[in-house]
Image 1 (tube, one colour):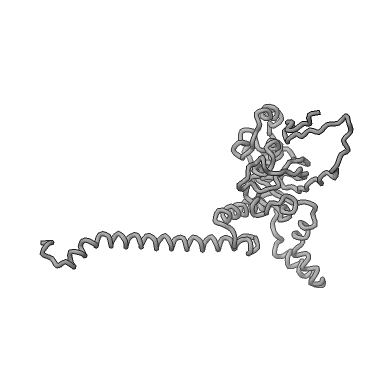
Image 2 (cartoon, rainbow, N blue to C red; image 1 turned 90 degrees about the vertical axis):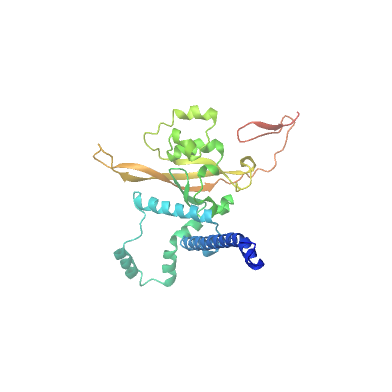
Length: 298
């Protein structure tokens, strides 16, 4: 009966499976295009809510938006649950302050409104907050002056990705990361240093970091090998921020560490550029591990 049909109807029957398949493909492409459009819009709205300038948020990719959003939420928890809480003033106190400042000039009010930014700009260094897992929750914008790394790139990243491998154990001990959790946090432990620090790292209580020195990378690691990056010696002064927690069996609340709040500044470079070579002197070069990489023949 098919051969009795006109040629037009036979062609329609032959082409109908292909046309249906093309229609399904076109419908699937339109649905995927619609999903991508909705997803891009949601990421765009989420990026606008971040406490960053619009010129920066408009250039962020999706992974950076997620990373910065998670860091911001962790930072809010870090600020509110710690002791003392870093919460804004109550509404009543704020109204009192407005009345008290009513006689002041507009310039004074603007300075007090942006007091934190002025303090960060006047510091001879940068401020950072690291969680107990070793991730930057916050780092001031002035870090780009001293390390050449941007605030957006460092926020949410692991601190162990930007410090020298020889200082990983030192940083982990300052943060109070237990030895069996250091590999999970990204801490690289050299074979010779693992045994030497095991006896000093019984962290029954979190030590107060005080003042210590680390070497931080001055070049971005994107597309570069770690050994090819330069390092600067950073003087870090900080303290552990804790939060009260109720533990069964204790009458008083126990303070548990949440992370490190620190001020860092780079040590000035050496001003010694030329050394007069006497007849009884020779030149040699060593790397960070004090291994000789070059030595003169004499």
